[in-house]
Image 1 (tube, rainbow, N blue to C red):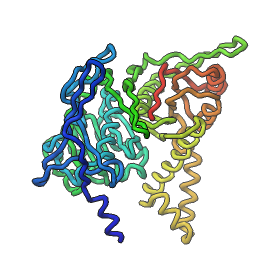
Image 2: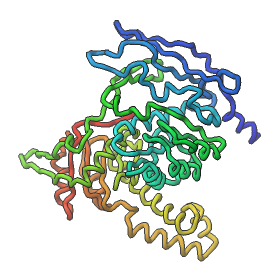
Image 3: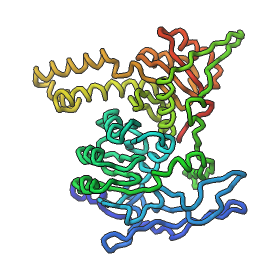
Amino acid sequence: MSEDLKDMYRRIVADGFPDTLTLTLGDTVLTYAKRVWNMDGEVRGLRYGENPDQPAALYELREGSHSLAGRSWRAPGQGVVSALTEGQMLQAGKHPGKTNLTDVDNAANILQYLTARPAAAIMKHNNPCGAAWAGTLREALDHAFWCDRIAAFGGAVVVNRAVDKAAAEFLASQYFEVVAAPAYDEGVVDILKSRKNLRILLLPGLGRLEEWAGTPFLDIKSLSDGGLVLQQSFVNRIRTVDDFIPATGTDRDGTTAVARRPDRRELDDLLFAWAVEAGVTSNSVIFARDGATVAIGTGEQDRVGCVELAIHKAYTKYADTLAFRRHNLSLYELQQKALKDAEAAARLDAVNADTRAARGGLPGSVLVSDGFFPFRDGVDTAIAQGVTAIAHPGGSIRDCEVVQACNEASPQVAMVFTGQRSFKH
């Protein structure tokens, strides 16, 4: 029975979808072609959709005007993931399904705003579990991985620079399902192929993301009743640190509060974190420090709850890092050993004590929030963990109260507004 269950993940589901798809939007006609690949002498489309019993098909925009509703949109020939060919599957492993490709796509959505430095995003379930940019790709990968070593297991790793030998050796030393890059240095694919089931994707468009970052695409959401919602995709307005807006607020009594402007280090981290925020399911917040995520809270219904979730994750991931580096055990393995082994229990106590003392690595970090803070509780909760600067959209009737929470902190916490919301549903 167990083997029968495993078989459903190996099967390829016939999709039955047509070879072409045409959308007529008033006078604009967009034509899409279904992507299939000739693999092992067999023509295959997507393995399956979100689940093994859901047929699915991938379509690439091939023809059509790239102007709509009075502005320019992404055009045919600008595909990144949808342009994937057989030759770009340097090692197919199990050829990809919907979730593999949408993870890579959302990583590209993040990396389009991080082109200034080598950057890496490690994705799971269409959210980043770790992201970083640094002086070298190897450094960025290392920092992204240690943001959340647990969640990175089996993830999709997407980078914006050619994979060199140092980066390839790191990637081959861990278990990932997908690696996607704009190029690979000579000889490094052989290093990656030591992982037999690893999907190695060559996506040249990952090296051209900066060209398209300011241009939206047509974002189509399907409703459960078969209806459609069309929208312009999110376009990040915070492209440099000068794009942040000074945070101020005035209460009903006419009292105005003005926040401290972040210093250059804080601004750089806020710029980085707001770029990552473009790919995180709302409600969400991100703690970041030194060009890497520290903790990501996703999909919560209330903002303070999202902050609390991210803090809990930061403490858990920090403790796991200590357990793994000190004892070569995950936090959960150490917890299990501690139930029966006094020495392991002492080691666990030390890990937990050091985690609490370090407050999960949060002191000195910055915080971004995809929506404004409706109350000061989320800000107070973050400040208690040592956050030094915060960015959020602004526009709440309680902006004054929220800014005052930063001003009352000792030392004073900085705050800026982004002037746009970054919800992703």
